[in-house]
Image (cartoon, rainbow, N blue to C red; front, side, top):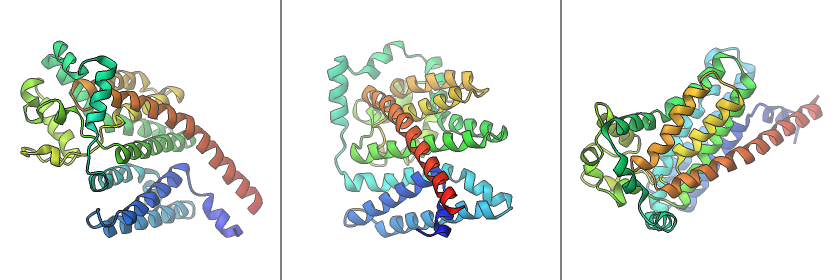
Length: 315
């Protein structure tokens, strides 16, 4: 390893590293399952191009004084998370044609003896549904709000560490989707097309449901919505990443932490109440959260120490 290469490696953050590795893994999966994944070469090629762009902007952000370069470098994980989410959508079902909802349903019944979402119908009311649907739809908003606050306060070290935990957490949840694809109780235990009638809200619930459905590639009014649905029930990424955000907010003592705690708590409850997830998905989301924090802190510390060592050798 020459000195020039060592210097270039030190500009990478743990978010860069996690994203580059995950994109590389996805491109390898595309190649391995080329016979099953339609247009696999476009997905694999896109991954390789994105890896090159990440490395390019990581280097240029240190060399360039242009604000736009630094802005792209700091915020690219946001569209990247969404891009990879959609890529897994195109990969999961071809790789795993069978859904594993039956297994998750059996686990819930083994734990509770009933379907918890049906039990929650006994306490359902339009005002509660409205509040919980709004909280569920705030998922990406609360993710972004934390980093806007850290960015405005110029807490750069905490910003990059927090960004890594979120990026890393998302990628771990995507591995869960690839290994154990499931659509969730909206489709298996309930009638998806009757949600607005069985679990009505007040004013915004139906529109917010359409918004969430669109994010999961389900066209409005689709007769067979399950055919379009993202296989993203296990683990509950909403639970996992909401807990990650709350961890960041409280350990970094953000001003918004108490507001985030209220919205986040309602969001976790909404995952089962609104039939998006089985309870075992939520339990798995908590376990994935604990693993994200435990392993993420170790990985971040080791990468920082490795970069410091490289800089000392290059000096």
